[in-house]
Picture 1 (spheres, helix red, strand yellow):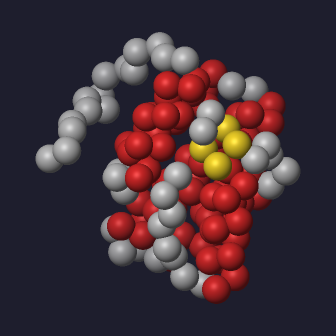
Picture 2: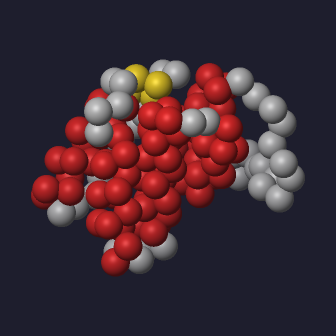
Length: 119
């Protein structure tokens, strides 16, 4: 076990940069459910385009949870919705290369395959 985290407790109030940094670390460890959970607290506090951006990241992570569970049916639709929300967003978000992330999954959607990038 690399680390453990209680997901049944409310998260401490953190700054967005710290939350996104933690989510990126979890993503790179392929802990996609935890990425979803960490970003959800931030998402609830946001409004407008930034909320859409974070929701896009959450949806991408949730799609990858289904990949891990060998449940391919919802993956395409979820990833398409994630890409829709990430479209026209800033290229970076607290160190997360959104442009590279978006382009990676858009290319894979066209090729109908999944490869997990490092973020």
